Length: 91
Image (cartoon, rainbow, N blue to C red; front, side, top):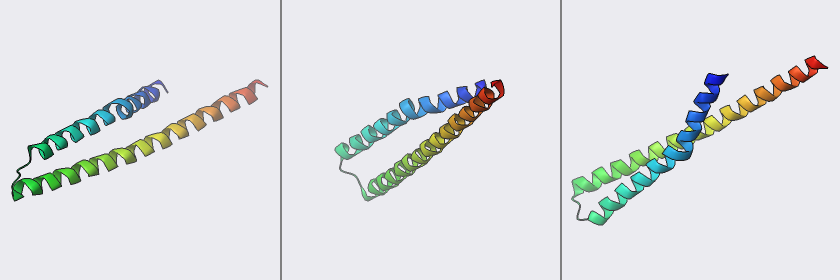
């Protein structure tokens, strides 16, 4: 159970710290490209592709966050069940 809690802690840290940092960094880089301006059609297409990729990454990370939350719920419910079973055995 200790390894699962460690893994869960790593996932939570990633979601809470790394995900917002990735989004902020991507936004800043995207903003710098916009400010730089004067892009050629090739640059504009690359920018559209990069925007699409960033959106796909964000959506993927959002789905991962939902899955982690579901796993957390499962683990919490499982732990509650074990505690209840242990309490019943003691009675």
